[in-house]
Image (cartoon, rainbow, N blue to C red; front, side, top):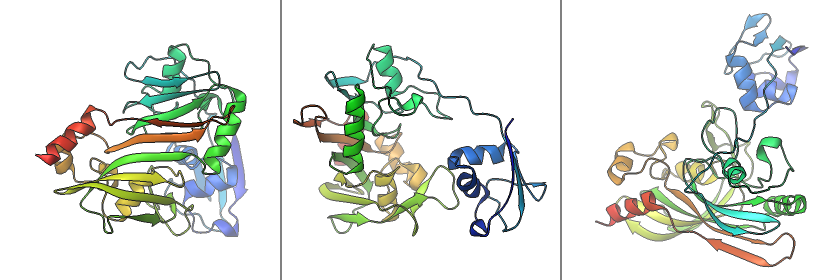
Length: 305
């Protein structure tokens, strides 16, 4: 069992235990929080939890079990549709309830697992459990994803996403009516200061830019065409929640559960409807579009009644 003993530097005074450990030991904050939850962190020889605060000059003792590597399990996903396939990449239309890749705490199906079950060869670049994955969709978000099959495609596509040359378009149903009806949300996003697994608009967050246009206004909700300039975790969900217009069904970020139940929505109403990029081998412009699945269409029909 690895163990580290070290003093708390002045620069981490007042930091949460999980945030401080992540910085000190080069761990993800999720992993650091899990170590604290398991009783593996002592400060001045007294156990502390993930949300306790560090004090400069204090003495930390951290012990943890080695994390077992995530494995890609080949599990078929019948509703996952392959919309394009060539030697370098595969584009899929992902149903809700499917994660992009394996991760701690997720036991459901994944895109990479579904592709493996279908016999697709994908790139081995990146972490083993994320092989070929150049961008992600939340498990509860449906729509278009591209996965690299060749090593060169992985490198080129990763760079394209990093340099923001990929066209990422979404359809989103927000509660209420955003004012103005079209605009740009430019607000930094980082981890929520108090709630684990959530993100928020915070002063020291990473730059995040979302553009939106109203497509149709209903009574109590608005259908939006959303274009992402950046690609932060939960970006669309966080940005519209910060405007007090959370996405319908997104109870994690404050959506009204009564409205979601009335519309039959059991997840955030969010669909990756457009994906455009230059082919990593040929440079040919490629554009894919996808219609919202049945659960999201039903919600719109109920709103229009």
